[in-house]
Length: 239
Ligand SMILES: [Zn+2]
Image (cartoon, rainbow, N blue to C red):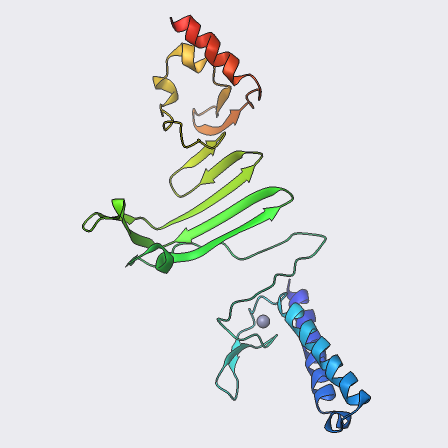
């Protein structure tokens, strides 16, 4: 990581040297094809600068320019200006962003003001959404005096093949499919509360270790095209 950072610093020094060489070239003071060519080269350097800056984590510190802007010591990116592109390596680990957590004990007036990260990525057909927010007030039923406070949280959702895995600071939830608007909300029950006849139809394994500690859950994928059959059979059995 350290070697990569110093490589990047060297690359930027070379780039900035080339840029000042081109920008100060006497050909640019005269009109003509040569001036055009130099102007184009400068534009290409500019693009290279943008893309190279995407690899910089801005970890070497910031400095103030003569114009009073705060810029990265390594790449010259202006601080707090939204980046428009991400450059990811084809090979190896792709890293986008850092692990953000709620960073304030204040309650914000609305969701937008409380938001720290609200971002998603599609990765080879799977979607990951990360939402980090501080506490905020939300108006329930859109009526005055019905404000509720939504606690600060970090919510990560992974969606794959119609199944969603939801992780926040209190829950780990797996939704096998999205509820349609006509369906009533699902029932919830602890495993110990469920009658055996219902439990028998759940392809669910609870894993625990020798100390009796919970270590995980395994869900067998229910067969796709038979749910209607199952319901029909159980219905008749209950009659
Ligand atoms: Zn930088």
